[in-house]
Every structure is written in structure tokens, then in C-alpha cells.
Length: 167
Image (spheres, rainbow, N blue to C red):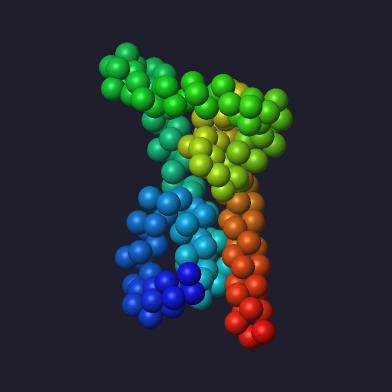
């Protein structure tokens, strides 16, 4: 693991955008934040960048869910998305988040787990029938808390690595 981080730092650290945005798109917030943090980027830089990327997704997902629920043609092309939404709504975690209401939207948005994040937060916000002016701050808050959690986790891992390397 240390060798991989050193390789990335030596070969890609100068080209942050080349690897950060694809990592963010493919691996999500946890992969992008932790890899950039291991390459030496600071929280004061990463937090605003990731929150901005998360925030840019919100209108896209609102539009997507609106088009899916409002159009017969879109429903035919999005059966897979609807099936995922149904399976997600049957999960115990998602039901628990629904019961929590607004804090549930923040919590599901901030969790660094598969199936959680911005698209799940927007879906829960729509299922709870929150207006966009109510949903946006909840989703952005979840993004901020999620980034802070991941940055703290990354710092802890880095300190442990330094402890074992020096010890």
C-alpha cells in the first residue's frame, strides 16, 4: 500500500485533476478523498473541492428523478434505476433513514458506503417530499459531514502509518 501511494505521489501528484475527477466519478467520495489525502493534499483544499463536486450533482439527480417519475418514456428506459430504487427502499438502513426524516437525509448522504451518497440522499429527500429549498441544505450538510469524516479517517490512517514507519 505504501509503495502504491509513493508511486502515485511521484508520478501523478502534479496532475491532480487527471486522476482526482475520474477517481471521484468511479470510486466516489471515499476513494477520491483518501487517495488525494495520501498524496499530500490538505483538508482545507479537498473539502471545498469535494463539496462542490457533490453539490453539482444535486440538480442533476433532482432532474433525473423528476424525469423518471414524470415520463412514461423515461420509465421504460430507466427500469434498472427504478428496480435499484425499489430494492433500496426495502433495505433496513433506508427505512431507518426514512423514519429519521431530515437527519436521515443528512446521514444517508454522508455515509461512505456503497449505495449511500448524493443520489441516495436526493432519492430519500424526494420520497420524504422535501422541497428543493429544504433538501439542498440537508444534502450539502451531509456532504460536508461526510467529507469531514473521511478526512479525519485519512488523517488517522496517515498518523498510524507514520507511527509504524518511525517505530
